Length: 528
Image 1 (cartoon, rainbow, N blue to C red):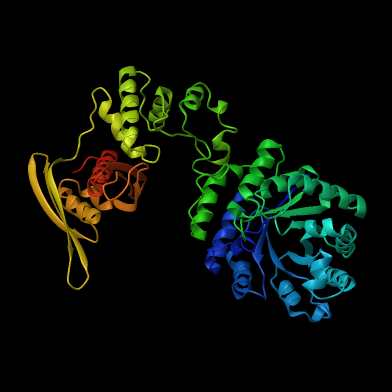
Image 2: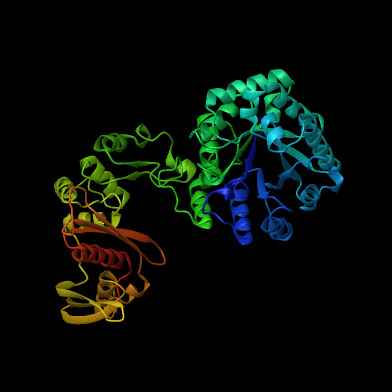
């Protein structure tokens, strides 16, 4: 079998709310998809979208694809127009791609109500367009829009569109669940029926599924199991409404669960990295709970799971995470038992197996702290500091000792709000006082503390606060509620998260800030 992995992130995926690719973005996405090993990259609609026209023009000189070929997307000729005179069809040819995919109406209701033409003219539009593309040296694919809905309403007409496309020279005819309303059993039944009606073998057909029933991936896999060898997906499931079939889930299921070789060797293990890179280009936060490639896809919280994982990681992982370039993580929460703490510590490079008393102490402290509102599952840095502080002979030196801090917030007559912080600390035997202003109390504290420490720890200049999350804990109410703060910090090499909890939001922030700087300094080389 020779599977065709057809990616339409740049066309269908770009219809997701919030995504707007520049031409440079589209070129970058194409390079990543090619690296992942897809066979076809649908670049857009030349002639209809100026950016897409520019993309295809620049792709001729700026893209050097190893695995994929570019595909131009468009529509069949307009009703009543000679195909050679249709400017949109001409733009498809001028795009210079070896493959052209045209969308055709296959639901007779859409033919009559949307196109406002006759069923016979619609067939002629398909026939003329495919013949014209083939005559101009193009490989022609035909997307049968609303295929499954049309087939359920009038199977004879939908089958006639399929036959017409193949008789005109189409290489593939793709069955599109455009409204996304199908279930796997419906997909399989329709394929069986259309094959019987047309005599076309399923390996010549293709599948394109939207995710309105949350079944796009399952429907795509069902079609492949029914004999279809061409499937269309988008990276991370991007697309209109709830999206499309997720490329990474589909290829992982086919290759790992069904043993179908759909990607070149060495490509599947790039899935997690490429998924994240494509999310960055789309300016959409990666879905941490996305199957296979999400940060939480192989994360385990319950102590029972951890006990089994300690014996054999595959007991609670459906595949080895490394085959898709992901990692297993142990989450440390109030549910954690000794096995969870031991595994998480080992993940961070700390072996507690030979220190049973320390393991007991850390497990007890985690449960106690989590009961007061701490959350270590998202704050690995604070957890690591806790473990290091309890290890026998711990060499974790706090970079300073706090004498006091003070924060003032001034609302001025002109409406500006200024925060000022003063910290008094002892650093290597020296008493240091520093004051700084900021756009908020936490920013002011951060600036003041850095000012007090920078002469002793110049590497602080590379640390940057990247995110600040505040949550009022469940069960607490009003302005005196308990607050949890998560602080994300990074330097040139890594990112880390720390946590603080207190009734006072400034104190909670201070705790997270101190942990952040302590962790970062412990991870860098000793100061000069």
